[in-house]
Image (cartoon, rainbow, N blue to C red; front, side, top):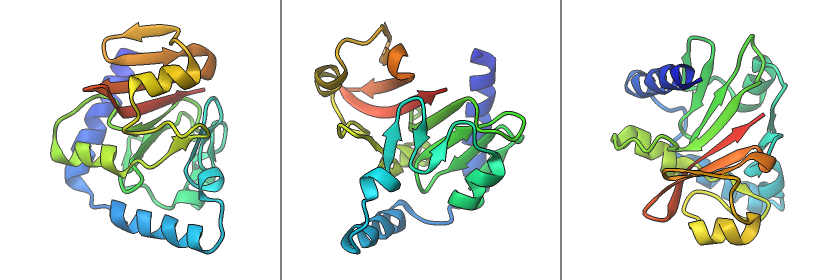
Length: 178
C-alpha cells in the first residue's frame, strides 16, 4: 500500500510540472460563489465531504467516465490510477476504471513545493460539520471525538473512513477511504 501511495504521489508531483490547470482556484471559488448567489446549496451539492461516500458529486464505486462527466478532464491522469483536479485541490484514485480507493483533498503528504501547496489552498471541500483545510486538531476532536489512531501528524478515524493531516495544528490534507 505504501508503494502504491508513493507511486501515486510521485506521478502527481511530476504531473504538476507537466500540465496546467483548467481553472485556477480563484475561478473555482468564483464559480462556487456564483452558484451560492443563485440560491444553490453549494455545501451539499458541490463541496461536501461525505465520509465513506465521496466528495461533492463524486462517489466511491462510480466509473472514471462518470467522474469525468461530472468534473471534466483531469489536469493530471497518472497511469490510469490517479486523477488530479488541481484547481479543486483533489486527487481521486481509481482501479479498473472505477473510483474504489482513496480521495485526497489538499496536501496530505505535506509537500513543500509551491505547486503542491497550491492543492492545499485550492481544496474548499468540508464535512457537514464544517471541517476542512485550516481546521484545528481541537475542532476535529470536538466534532468527531478522539481519533481511533494517531500517527505522526495524522488523525485517523477508522469508523468515518477518513483521516486528517496537520501541520502547525492546522489541517493541510484530508483522505477519504472506501
